[in-house]
Image 1 (cartoon, rainbow, N blue to C red):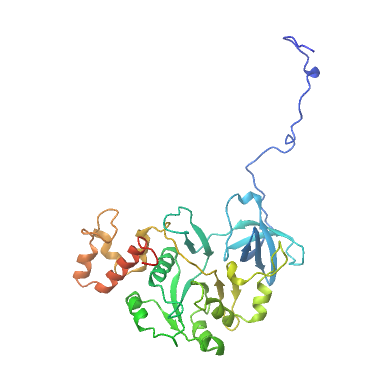
Image 2: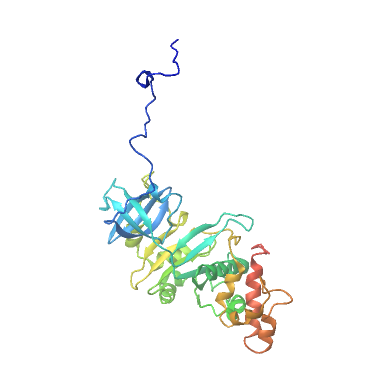
Length: 336
C-alpha cells in the first residue's frame, strides 16, 4: 500500500473527474429574444397544447421555469419547432402576467390551491333547475371564487322545462348577476346558444358546473364541430383523443369574437385559499362603509360598520345580506 508523506507530489495523486466541471452552475438564463407568443389551450400530463398564430403547437415547459406551471388561458412565449407538425415539440420559456385567475382547493381543509383557468374575463356558472337539483351553496362558492379572482359572473340556468327559475333567481337578484335561462329543447335547436353567445362576445369565458347540468352540451352548441376537432389536440402520450371534460379546454367561438373554456365537472369547490377581505370589492355600494370597520373585520360581527352604513340608507339591506351569505359560504359545506 502506497503511503504519502507530508510533501507529496500532486501529480502522483489520482483525482476523480468532475462530470460537471465543464458546466458551472449559473443564475444567468437565456433571453430567447426570438420566442413566439401563444396561448395555452389545454394541459395534459406535462404536455401543453398552444395556439401560435393560427397553428396548434404541442409544447413542454422549459426547465428554467422551475416549479412555475402554465394553465389553460395563460399567455406564453415559446421557442423550438413551432410548425405544429406531427411529432414536433416546442418549449415554453416564459409565462405572462395573469389578469385574472380562477382558483379552487379540493375542499375547505386543503391548503393547496389549484389554478383552473388564467386570464378569463367571465365565469359562466351552469346549473340545472332540475335533474339534478340545483345546489345554491355550490353557486355561492363559484361566485366567491369569481369575485376573488377578478372574473365577472354569469348564471346559466338549464332545463327550465322541468322547473321554473323564479325561486333560484330570487336568491341572486340582489347581487345583480346577469343570467340566461334555457330549456333542453333549446340546447339542440340553437336558441339557447344564441342567447348565451350574446354574453360571450369579445370575452374569454370559463364554464363551470357539476356533472349532468348540460354544460358541455351547451359548449358543443356554441363551438362548431370543426373547431372542436382542430383545437382538441390528440393526447401526446397515448395518441388518442380525450373527452373535453377530462381536462380544461379553450375553444374559439365562431360567429362572435371570443373564447369559451370548458372545465371538468366539479363535485366540490373548496375556498380555503380565499381571503374574505377581497370579496367586498365585488360590492362597490358597500365597500365605502367598511372604512370605519374594526381591524380584520369579518363584516359579519357585532362591531361591523356596515350595519350603520346600511341603516343610514347608503345601500339596500338585501345587499348586505347577500354579502354575508357569500362570506359564510366558506364555513358551510356545499350540501348544507
